[in-house]
Length: 538
Image (cartoon, rainbow, N blue to C red; front, side, top):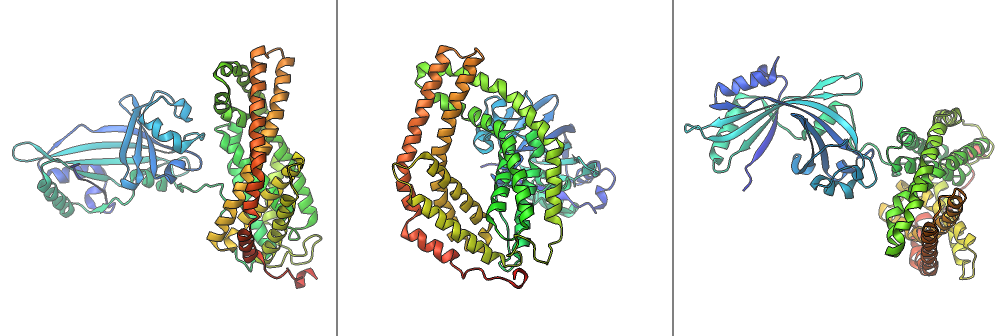
């Protein structure tokens, strides 16, 4: 049976904790308990997580400990008071999973972190001291660890001292001694149970909100709210997400920063195009064009990201005899990546982009105008009515376009259907708080299945064409060997075969979305009376 350990914090108002909390507390304990004091140690800790708090949301914490010239990574279980589950030595700066040596921490980290980079969330310096409680035979019957930690905040807070922590740990075979020690400490010191692990206390002291960033849409809209005000709320949330990812994209910390920035851009464009009649037409036209530019200039790096992330799978899809010949393709992609990333970083630091963000936020935060504006006839209409109307119309479009597709339909028709499905999904996600959660989850799930099929079909077509262009460019640059051309050709052939499999599965998957059962759910959710003109729009 594992010895019991309990964590406490010393109440800051306690008299013995004034001045030098650790020394005063040590003296108070030794005056009433027979103890051996071990050497005082110091260490520096950094707690690491991804930008979107992947580890925290998985109930874990990753601690980098530096002490006595050694660095180690420690994996902790937050659900069990930061109990240590794995540890491994560290000789490199932690970043991407691929940067870390093999070991138990990397093994646990890989499925949680994915392609995201480890970032330092909070740093603290700790002084620790262990007091061994002795019996009359000088045998250790319990251990008391005192720890005084200082958080190194990055803002005006500077260093923030945390309350002195006390961990009381038992020794196997001396359960009664542990109970006696615990009672004595409770009488002697003003102790409070440590309800939060040290990591969470440090985050709070640094003013950080764990789990505070998410790219998921999670609005809480009032069904009776004016449509223009609700739409501004949606667009402001998307702008916050976009801006949160700019620095990570410019520094190229990991590919998900650019991905989230582009998704926020795409959602913004969709909101401007699909939530009709609530914002002035001139504003909509202006910013649709400006955000289309942003989507365009961020595309080349994202395309390269996708290829490089997927390269191991693409390589493995080839016969073993052709796999090594694909390496020149990877080298060519990497060689062009640096130039494209540099150009993107310059664009995101440029005046055109900065002005776009400034103008957009100024419009979204400006007070709504009560008077009629061109193109904004439904500005004062309740948002629920507008949402119902827009979603109903997009459902009809998806059904109409999907039912018109046959085995003889050109690829372009599937691409148009995909775009309509994306618009429908974004509309439903924007307004999901206005509808019963379980019904909305079901609709989104079915729509996602259809989008996965259409997306796979379209992406494979685009990737195959891009590979043809890349092979031609490599040949023109004189870096394409016969083997690399053959392996790239085989890869293109494999992609086209996968594309045809997606094409053959379309009719079955669309029939699932277009079922009578699903149609009944959609009708029940969105079939309100048509939007009536309001006083403000007449």
